[in-house]
Amino acid sequence: MGSNELPSKLPILDFAKEDLKPGTSSWLKACSDVRLALEEYGCFVVEYNRLPLELRDKVFGVLKELFDLPTETKMQNKYEKPLNGYVGQIAKLPLHESMGIDNATSLDATQNFTDLMWPAGNDRFCEYAFKYANLAAELDRMVTRMLFESYGVEKYHDSYVESTTYLLRLLKNRPPKVDEHNLGFITHTDKSFTTILHQNEINGLEVDTKDGKKINVELSPSSFVAIAGDALMAWSNDRIISPSHRVIMNGKIDRYSMGLFAFNNGIIQVPEELVDEEHPLMYKPLDHIGLLRFYRTEEGYKSKCPIKAYCGV
Image (tube, rainbow, N blue to C red; front, side, top):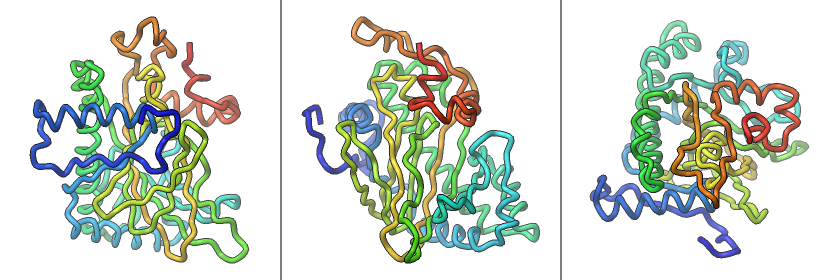
């Protein structure tokens, strides 16, 4: 992966191994593989068998129920934090619709969202969404622990986890009509620290590489994509890239996916261990939620790299 020309597929890391435990040789290799993948691509595919296929099918079943609700019901999904609530009915982005559950690893938060969408109740949705969010969060914490260990800054991981909350974005892309463009979602970078993405059987994710090429990401039912967000790029002092990506819809079947976004409630700063002569300090300490608000400002919209405009040195 250190060659000038990157392969045409994302790295695939296997986290389904039974011997993948901290301190083992397979764990140490995985730590290195995670870091290298994020430095070269900003993301990677991970095979993870902790999500039973039965639960996976149930989750996507209730997602369809959710998006089949009336638009006025779905539009009640609102939060004070920017980028967290309902997105849809956008003329320039007609194929996309999404909602969010803030603090999704909390049963109370998931129950509140469920009650808002289904005042008469929907215990199945609440149960499955809550279980999924916590399984994905477990995977996310494994990825960040490996990354911190690989950089030799594992002493900061516990405090990072304690100040992290998760936003679960529930996403639907319908296929285009004859006269519509096939853009499912615009090219963007994630504003999270990390993102864990999972989808139904419909592919569509495209990731930009450092050398300007696009990778069409193909996933199996047990595959997830781990993506570095802008906040992780800043934390790593530009060692890791936050990759641009988009969704393209080429088929005739709805694409459902779920993105678990990790946000830090405190201040994110570059560890002193990641600053040296070769890597001078590139970012001031940043307020993660402040970054989201900045992104919604005129300056944030116009900036080619909002994270650098917000807190770059």
